[in-house]
Image (tube, rainbow, N blue to C red; front, side):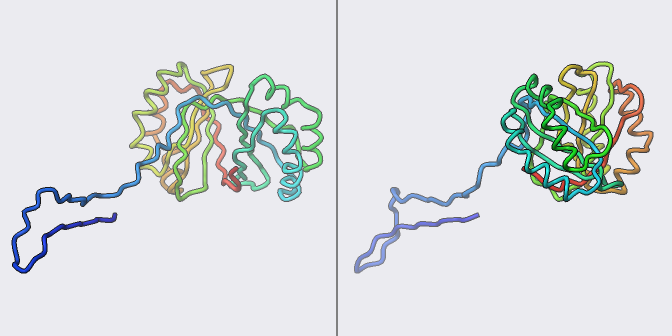
Length: 232
């Protein structure tokens, strides 16, 4: 914060008190407007999760396939590696067109690129409409992606937002959430883990079970904890 003080006074042979009412006090605080990091405009995304034999080899093949992704309106966003198994890779991409993205997921060139990169087993593809994102910089690269079913999207969202302070108190900060593009009963939630011990305890707590019940969550959630290794 910079403070400027400008004072104007008359000069002469005799000292006189300055009574110039036209003098302007420009004392002011120069503050940078806060940037809004919350995005609520729906964003269509595709998330791919699979195992690889060697991450470095896979990453080379992934980068080489970028032109084909762009041709299909698919834009790299985040790459993560599993905390329990670093060869389990999760890729999140933004998509311009859902129909083209669905076709791209079945494109032979993508299958070939995955084979070249040493992808093992059958990859899983999820098409998501993210309805909330927080792009603020934070001091943790560890994330939890949780997928679960709810009875009603609006009722779940209301109950979820009411639990914000509870999550913060237990080492979790929401980064994004949304639902399957074809089914808003299937919810996808991404949180940053700010305190691993607190978060792990909360995941197993009756407190969270109660919060889920209040939001109409059905069954047990599927959680994948990963570390962000690249952002685009």
